[in-house]
Length: 168
Image (cartoon, rainbow, N blue to C red; front, side, top):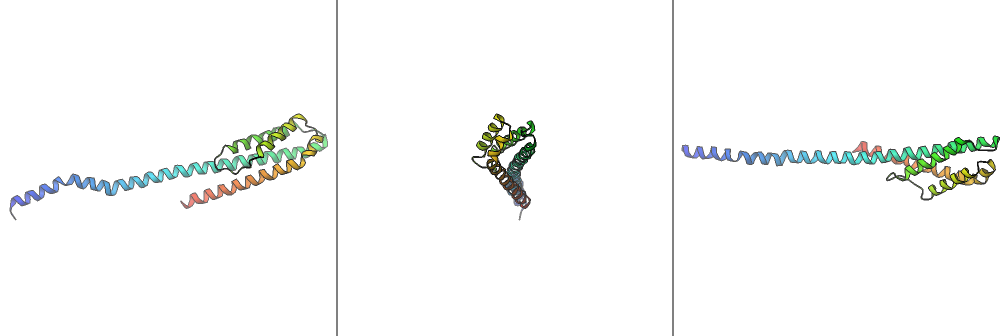
């Protein structure tokens, strides 16, 4: 081997250093960046799902609790013969929280419940006497059962989302 061959071999390796760096980038850095980008995207996606599940649970639980508060005030009104202003407020808050729940993607809902709540609010606003409430007992029990079921379903969904997020 003569000196000219050694020089040309050295020159070849210097010229291919740039190619080696590009190859190193493509083989090592680019896949790591792609995996990191995918993980960031999945974290954002999972956080949106978790936020929706939390909101669904919160609003359904609030609606159910407010409606239960309304029913308790109806039971207390038997002695006085009239509903207090706090009972109407509890009913309106239950309806408002259910309306917020309807805007949450993926929430468990009943398609007719909002209309039933609005009808009940209108009837309570028009006459707060206990005589007006007695014929509505079956409707109020039905609404309470639906709200309780929806709250349970959203709680179960939240548990599932949390469990699946922990596994991911």
